[in-house]
Image 1 (cartoon, rainbow over the protein chains, first blue to last red):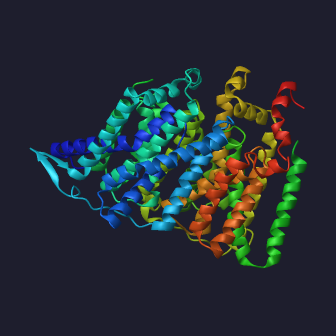
Image 2: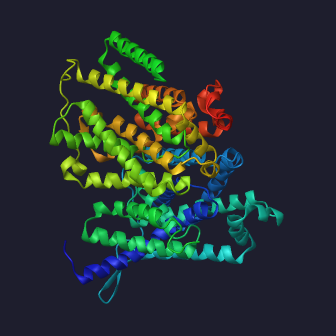
Image 3: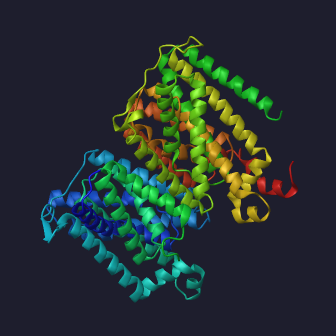
Length: 291
Length: 324
């Protein structure tokens, strides 16, 4: 184990940037699991789907992956609305969201992964963009653009969502349905419709999440599994449904992973996220800030 | 002893299966049959936790692979007879289940499911970084030509062992269903809060179910190194094990032991045929689609069609009037 302060500084900076990116892939789960109580463990698979969409747009049409993902997000929104409709009719309405609902999403995760394997094979895919490669330098600190741009894109998306939730009627209705669906019905708003919109939004974020993922690292279909632990660890630690908490938890995890990778070797970093999650569940299941 | 006649019937059926497999005089029947039997053990074992108490374990592959790696480690330390090794794998996986359960079972069900998935990845990371059992390069295990005491072909020996494990797991599952323990499990599944309030020791029962279920998953994995002769983390921890093990009970029906048994025999046989005739990626896709189709359209599974789960579904009433 080699230690130096410049290595430590670099690890912390890249951990922060990585954390910003993690927040972007987690925000969908913060909405679906945190607010709507839908345990969408297939979310990472949809993120990988988003990566492949960005990959196709980039390699065939030469579009910037992040721009492409924004253009594609309405399609993901529709996909999310469709999935919620099936989920609602088959499980939520029957009051059977537990075992079978979980198995449903697990099945979706698996189907998405196998379909991607069948279409694209198991090779790693990557994208081309001007910001992959160069770095910004501030004194001794180096900011690689391929981490900085996804981090900023993700934080911008989260900021936009936060504004939407706190400023618009629909957004406030989503926050309300998270607290008390029955009361929302008394206010003459249809909780099912609101939940459908919220869930569809959560899937739409997977489009952008996927694009920033493929900017940061090459993607193959089963990569999503590594993100299941990360994403749920962050969502739980962030206090389920709190966007600010999600960002902070994501950055804490990013720094921890980056330090582990720098000082112990990258083969240990998947265990960090999951160990973090297990510890979080055992010690403080309400998250770092509680709810 | 209650359940003993049933145990004898199971043994007789198992003997008939073994003889029938011998009569075909085809080595491949044993080779493919082993996988089917392995899935029977996994599905029925998974169902003890998943079906009876309603807690979904996504970490099947972790328990299974741990059993397999236990064999690899023991093989390098002290060569023991395989049944003893299987027992050791079961104990290790059962202990893991107990620890996991202790950490997460006090929380809502979904947390337990996510944590099991996380556990599988942590376990995989440890195996990748542990050179003694092969690390990321994998480990080779030499399969003997014939079994030490029985003098039969080793694949047949593995088949026989797995068949015996099937008998044990089915007998245990049935015993649980018909005991107070099963009533307690069903009470947890139906309404955990009400069960706790009525004096059912929910945490203790859940821990017991997790440990027992984990033990059977580990025991099913223990002979794997001898079957495949080469074990590396990605194949031992394959998500396919988790999906299959969840799909089989849900397709067959989770309420009672015939459900996972039927589901496992059906799906595993189908997969063995499809792997040979089509491709392994496509057959996994089929399993995923069938799983989603069944949870949406047939929530009680195949045994629900025939009303075989009537007894299990009558549990709430049985609880109210005490033991019948």
